[in-house]
Length: 152
Image 1 (cartoon, rainbow, N blue to C red):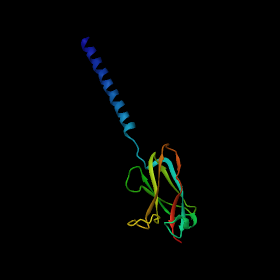
Image 2 (cartoon, rainbow, N blue to C red):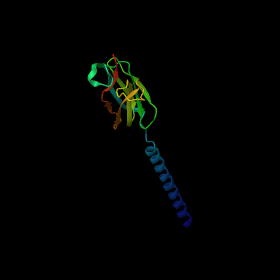
Image 3 (cartoon, rainbow, N blue to C red):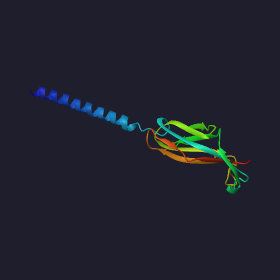
Image 4 (cartoon, one colour):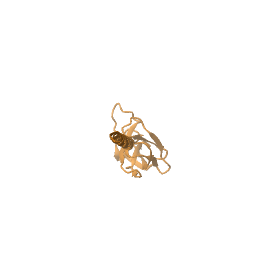
């Protein structure tokens, strides 16, 4: 009889061990698969780009007109990455959109002519950027308007 109790005890311990292993496996899968910002989700980021023409780039008072910026390159950086993760082009209405994004922080940017007049800055490559965060998996973020500056 004592031997039978030992066998039941070992089966019980084996079941418990197996049960704990399964719990650990499922916990590792669900908690260890934290998705970083980037492609593969259901959210999107969209916005509009305008082009402002100035007589003197460094003087906003010399603005001649503002129009939509068609065929403008717009870039997006996923999270803390260094390089752009994707590029979009504005349509004829100056609109762009990045689709199928996951939750996280993003930087949307483009290049404009320099309006600061600083020495040592590339006059054709001033960065205009907006930082946004997607907090819901199906969220649609409307980015504040971006403006590129140009001469007539």
